[in-house]
Image 1 (cartoon, rainbow, N blue to C red):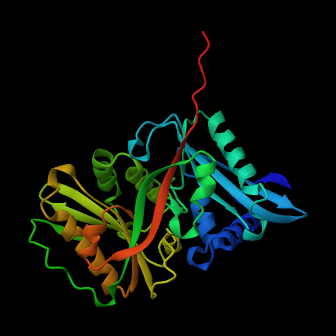
Image 2: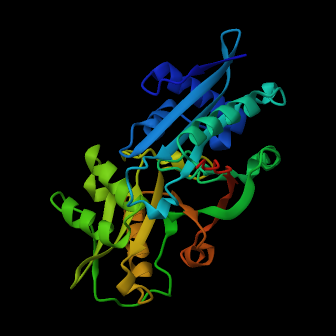
Length: 326
């Protein structure tokens, strides 16, 4: 077996990663080369690296690791600045228990340690393949053996919006929800910078830089201006809807999230009103299978007809900090 670096700009490498991941995880978690290309594009303030494992000219597995650039400080929602991520790791089933995954994981952990990481998380990076370890794979014992500890459970929720109707919990609010319009980018950036200065601000900043369709963001307007937002994903959106693994749901597919309300307006019904507006927009555009991803708010979304669709175990490993020498 030999290791070779991944070239994220090489379409052949993206095809190989898609094939390895799909081979390891099965059709319910299939990846396309387009998904891989989207998830591994350069992101401002993020460094990433990856390696393939090969034998006799055939790829057997791969790993991708990433880390927040230590020069940035406005990413508190992503966790501490000394955190790194195992963004993706996969080996073909027929080659498992041969040390390939262990070798790839050790390389990634070493690379992250050299960058000053003291904590490593599985998945949940800035443009994630998954928000944690998919429980349906049953592979947590591998990571437990390698020093990872169970942290949190998060869920994807799903519903068929074909017959969506607003739930009875909705109440009148002094506000209006509309798709964002060209020219409103700076206002939304300012809102996110103030209310959600970490991951969600960075995601929108990157979205604008890559020419994303601004109307994929829904804005809640009150007399104070923008006081909430949610993001929706269609099959023709910049963010590939395959990121949410909707394959067991009826097409057309859609997604909603993240969703956020300014701190001063929470607990007043604005969140439910914003969510309803986003779901009605998806419904009115013909979306059937819809995913709300990466949440712990299971009971809240259940009121809108959503059921648990996929569960993920978030796992974390602490690396020993080097002793300082005086």
